[in-house]
Image (cartoon, rainbow, N blue to C red):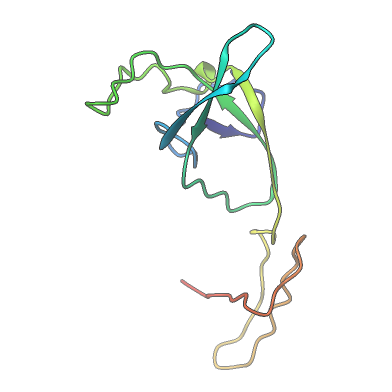
Length: 130
């Protein structure tokens, strides 16, 4: 599983830095759901996945048949962007824009007017880190 801003299966970049890279954290046979071809569906979970910038992202899928769930290793058949050539879906991430910049002066009060697609709740907080 990889998140990319371009078409699935394009590009030579490694997929190690994407938030959903790696093996699934859970599998569930959904035998009650059968597709038109008569094959049962399987639900696969990648968790946690964290995306810090709002936008629309393609979920690109690669099948690594060499994955060993006991040894937790594979031959790396899903190591490059071009191998993730099946679009499995889209993710729409809403929230505040991570590229907002504010000018503040040391030891002076500073107003941060954060713009977000989602409404803020009374329990929401911010943390300023260097």
